[in-house]
Image 1: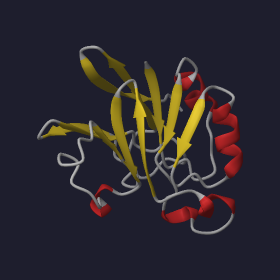
Image 2: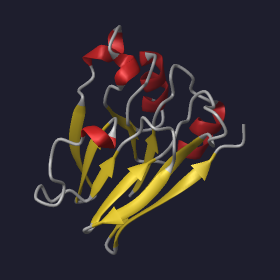
Image 3: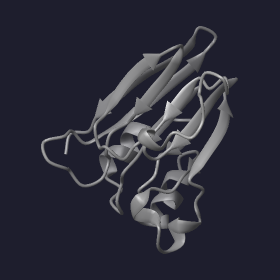
Length: 152
């Protein structure tokens, strides 16, 4: 199963992001959507699970949940906008992947058997950080993720 992970669009859905996510079976948006039309455009590719970020506190995106747990390919993904606000023990909750955004810094790390994935920001460039999304493959051998830097 191929899962696309996007975050911090801040109202800007780049065509390069749509291309990078085009083959995904599911898309996770880790908050700071900025405009509900972005979720509509992503839903034209695949089913979307989205949470709100700190810029989504007003308007239609304010109705998105602050956190979400979703099982994909037999693996449990826990979504929270800022990993600093993590409100569960992922190991005790048997979470396979914690998906976050907020920092705009892409990264993949594993701690105590849990993958922590931040796809970075796919919206407006912030400082010298890359514009990126992540692709996650769930298979019999487990979960693998890679950051895809968008050429913008």
